[in-house]
Figure 1 (cartoon, helix red, strand yellow):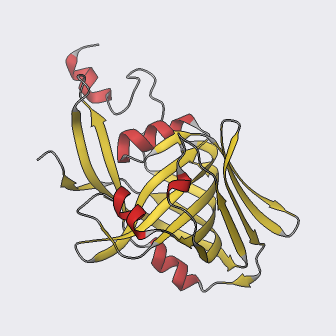
Figure 2: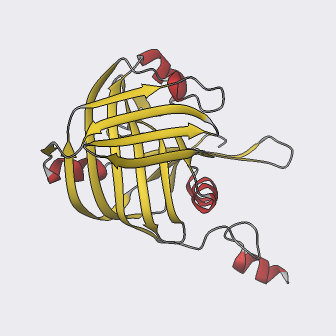
Length: 245
């Protein structure tokens, strides 16, 4: 393989058998359970990187079921998203994500900088309850419950939230271990079809774990719960701040 061929084909690793295909990445029947909770403001400020600004002492704990994802397959994801502002515009900082499928782990980290780790999340309905769980290997680290479709939520409210920008801290080390890329990345979800949105009573428990420290942002009070289903496209990102410049 000559140098020109390497340049033409080097969009992901491994070179001759990439872990994921080129985008765009379309998700069909993507199902969310998001429980927003109040936490410790100092704990939030300790993990959110400047120039992002923490706007409120809230965290969105998410479970996402993705049965039909272009190039990535069928998988489930769980993690924490923090409301922030950047240059006066409200958005969300993706703090932690745990999932059970290698291609979106590789693609998420390499392309956008998603903070993804391998774990065992689950989102399912148990009779009258929507249940989200996250196990890190054999240890339970998160359990969320919500009454199944108790009340409809206005679609415009959900679509407005989905239209907000999302932020990631992309880190790729040099071969000597020093940071070669350290960037704040912004991305959006696009072409959204909202198929339904509901709320209901909810509860969230987080448990300490050294390698899945979701409990480091402790639950003080559940603020709200949201269950919705969409078709949507995950757009590629843009660099909005270079920490090494």
